[in-house]
Image 1: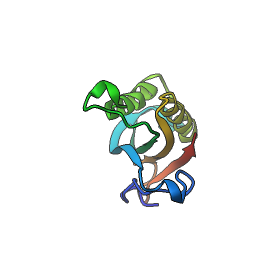
Image 2: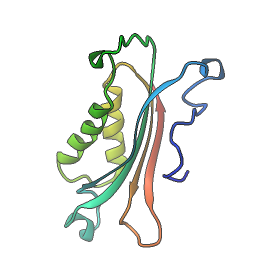
Image 3: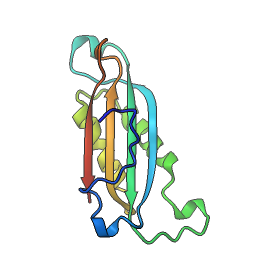
Amino acid sequence: MDMKEPLLHIHPMVWRRDEEDDVRALYVRNFVTSARIGVYDHEIARDQRLRFNLAVYLQPPFDWHDRLEDVLDYDRLRQGILDILSSGHINLLETLGERILTMCFSYPEVRAVHLQIGKLQAHDDCEVGYEIRQRR
């Protein structure tokens, strides 16, 4: 899957066919920030740019009453990623992905998560990354 493709497609692992008539999701798309990540000497000594695409699928009830305190605010998801990154050097994208997944599932209204992390500077000729799709 190309990182620039829309992320909010409904994957069969996340939703059954009979549930597809009422799907709600929050997303943080094309979020680019720097992080200390990697196992090689040249990675440990510098920040690297990462791109995050995150979609969290919500479970009912959807009783939001037009109040921010009744919803999972996408800013909390974005800040959660930043908090994980600021906690110190991480060796593997897989470790980072699992930490973000755990953060997302700490919110009881999250039913499923789709996360893509791309390393933008690992190679000159391609983008590499890690992708997770998981349902609670």
